[in-house]
Length: 122
Length: 122
DNA sequence: TTCATAGTTCTATAATTATCGAACAAATAA
DNA sequence: TTATTTGTTCGATAATTATAGAACTATGAA
Image 1 (cartoon, rainbow over the protein chains, first blue to last red):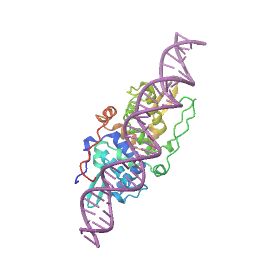
Image 2: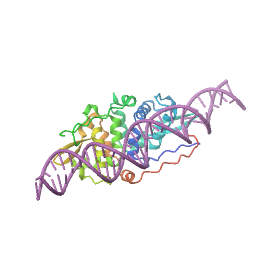
Image 3: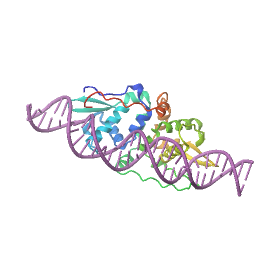
């Protein structure tokens, strides 16, 4: 129980990373991390239960988006910016710089309604 | 049955787009589109059924990643590069330029095994 | 009109995924 | 030692998603 599994840089998979980033809660976590540099898991205020948060952190870690460092009773999280930049140049910064206005916070509360298709066959 | 619904540029949502791009089949389609410019749905050789392909195209269209234009019996697809660039600068190009070596094609055939966690509590 | 082409929609199913609460585990403080 | 803090893991459930086949629709050609 000492080390956590993190994928190697050259094993990072684009689709896995995109999937990891496509969740509103995880995206918010990533953004806070980008600002804070390194922060403990629990510092992130989220509307979900502890076990759910644990699941999200695990998803991000296994995708290779962040690194988890054990320190005392807490796990300190940090973005794997260098690895991500090396393998997928520009991806992380594009995601971080993206306009976070309405959307993400909104989506985590209330998913947008499925648009009603207007047109018989399309 | 004339027009298809496409989200407006300013309604594009990052998480929705990332989710749309996180599927191996859809990612491959997007890459072909980026090369071919505009191409009919059916030109894309995929291992999935017609109805499944239709679902993927719809997902991409509703996310705002591509545009579908009706022409005769076929639907011509094209990337919404300008809209994407305007709203999320650098995102599409980062995804397109990403090393597509092993991973994506591989993942569509055989998903990578869930790594066995080694460590009691993490 | 009849047929072929291209794709959608419906229905169903299997697989993932998000979520939570309860029980557990490790490090540290009292 | 016992209790606290910080998080994980397990088991269950609900929601989403990928997939396919069958029936359907629209366009254009014979």
